[in-house]
Amino acid sequence: MDIFIKTHKVYNIPFMYEAMAETYGYLGDQEKEAEFNNKFTHAKEQLSQNQNNTVNLLIDKLLTEKEVSAQTFKFNTIIFSGLMLLIVILIAFLLYKKLNRVKKQIIDESSDLKHNITRLQNENETLNHKISENNSELMMLAESNDSSFLTRFQELYPNFIEALLKRNSDLSSADLSLCAMIKLDFSSKQIASYMSIEHKSAQQKKYRLRKKLDIPSEEDFLIFFERLENDEDLENKKE
Image (cartoon, rainbow, N blue to C red; front, top):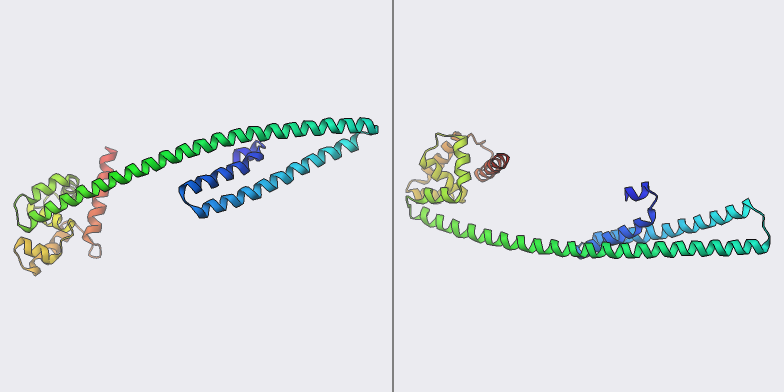
């Protein structure tokens, strides 16, 4: 729209507002659709008023510049009005064709967007289902105090373990197993049960782990782990 204003093609602006309103309509945003419909109506009325003012100014200028006979003036006025009408019709026709192309393009792009959104939603559901299955498997291994728990966890969350070891390379297998259980959102009571230790001992282990990883006392473990993984993913992408 800035380009239209700078190039004095303001007659395109109402149709851009109309296209925006239709786009938001396709997207289901009724508030934005109504907002741009109002802008379209206002801009169209203003454009019509400006065109009428322009025509009137041109006619007045012609009348004041020359004094002609009634017959010549009538002839010239008819010719001028016919040309203006022809130009307006031509512009309207070109804009109509252009608007139809824009509308078709927007419809096609909206259809592609909806298709991509549906595909991503399906992929996300599949991923969530797979994560849920993997976590269920890990929980069963942890509940049975299976020695393969940490190995299996490391297979499913390699970046997480790598990020922990970058934070502190001296972490023991027991520390990593504790981190894995915390990430799976096990409570201190569950951790104590699965490790066959007292509840108080589980809390002490979490306290010592917080010191090893330099986690502020006010920060939750899960929030810290999420931030740690995000930093690791960002670092891997840079590499």
